[in-house]
Length: 246
Length: 317
Image (cartoon, rainbow over the protein chains, first blue to last red):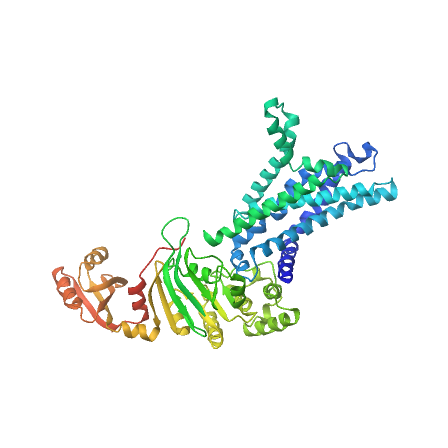
């Protein structure tokens, strides 16, 4: 069965590159965050510290645009073009198609993330020592964050036939799930609403990334992202299965 | 090979698309599903190919249930959906390679099979072109090559020749006839000549129900007492003639065909052999002061039988 998942995976990666989505994604991902990292928001040079913390703090926001842009077509495009009928009459299960597609999107995000490694490498050579343990934790967290974001956009893409709808729905939900964690620090919550405050902090995709951006791997954060991804995987499968009975 | 038992398929709203349909298709048979748009042919095919499940009833393919053992069944089937959806950004070769790989074929047999399919479907000239650049005819051929690549025992083809020009249709039918020696084929169409040219047996579906299931020869024999009449009436107002003719007793159906000249309108009526329609029509025309300018009786062919069985229906949703 691995070969069939691999076939889906290769088709997906190929379609990213055939339709130039991959090139646009990689170029923008390298340009935008790096320019912001070096020149805006205080920049690395003002900080005078060999750290990528600033870059990783921005990452949950950067992903809000980039990941829906990359994955909005995962199901919506298949539905729109009618190829979903083709896909689900091949001898593969819904689950295998989902895994193949998910891994293809994740590969592209990981490639984009790895392209930013030139920052610590060049800094190490010319400026100063980087803490490579911290760097590992930051990249590891970024991959987990990407898994959660991709699973959300995949699910929302399965609900619609239009790419733009999938993009806007995903972008909106990701924005809410990202900024909700900062609500308690922006708004004064009364004591009796402390439970709501805790919920906001704990469901936020960004607050769970804070430790990773500092270079700390906390098992609670790892479990949060894995659990989040699993829940949206499940919802995605249910949404795909609904075609059989509706 | 395929057994459809009391299958009902309801969508969220409205009446069921398929209502308690049952039929069997034996190994090596070529069966035509015939019916107007919206009759339930595509829904039925989607259920046989495991794309969707019946609301009630069951479908067995090679003795296995489509709900519980879909992977086994999908391995046996080559399915060509109605509008031949394909990945347009892939080249023909990439697409055929993908469809073979996803069916679990190994590298060596993929290469051999692609060569065979390219030859069978005459795709040599376009094999390295992107599918999005191909004409409808070539896309259909690519579709056929992709469903045959794993040498399936069963072929399910939904409107396989729709959108093709006459030459392409002839080529496509030749390929299908060649395949029919080895495979079980179900094809849906609303084109009668297609059924007559390819199929041994026809299942006529109307509003989600089977209204006839027989060989073409048997169907024509069964309806041999049916006749149709071509007649022309000279009158001033077509609308009035059309409305008034519906009052003439003895015909299953009376349809306006064409305008022969300024005031001469040609009609076609389907009747039983013993019907009094001829006399009724003549006296009715006389009473209206019209002229019956031509009148000719013919035996009903498959088209007339189909008209009687299935009639017209609304477009599918």
